[in-house]
Image (cartoon, rainbow, N blue to C red; front, top):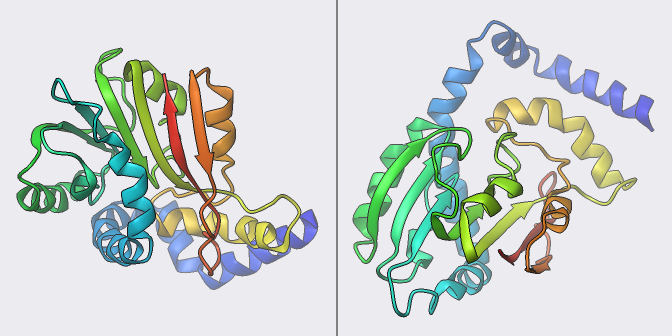
Length: 237
């Protein structure tokens, strides 16, 4: 099976050779970072239409967390943002490693005046954020892309009793044909999708960090490869 994966990876590499040469020469990443927000804006809109009820079910669990005070919320890898699902009065900090998302973030802010915006942090990690500074962290389709963003860091920035709401695509079952194709496509996919990894077993990160509560489910998978299976849920510090 490993030999087959390597042969198919080589075939995909040959078919996409110009992309890999541009990456080797340092030309591709700046181009990718500039076009990727436009791609995500389109894909997020389509995804929200298909999964809006599930996404709203997950993220509106925030309601009630700030009944007696304003909620400090970190939108992690905010991209084109989840603001429409946030309850009124949240104080929003946005973090994304790609500065080109700021244009879309500004648009989303203008459309969601029920929130208060604190800052937009351009960084690949949460080192700029203080320990225990957030009531809520929201992360949707981000842990697949940024190596330095880890669930353990989310736990660090959460206050005691704070909640992490997550939605991520994950690896197909080990040994399946679908997993094989994820392995084949991943080296090229990472360049096209700004670092996105197809074979991350992100659920293990949630299970291995010492949270007081973990609720996780697998919604019905998307019907296309290579990002079919997802996990969604919440953890409580």
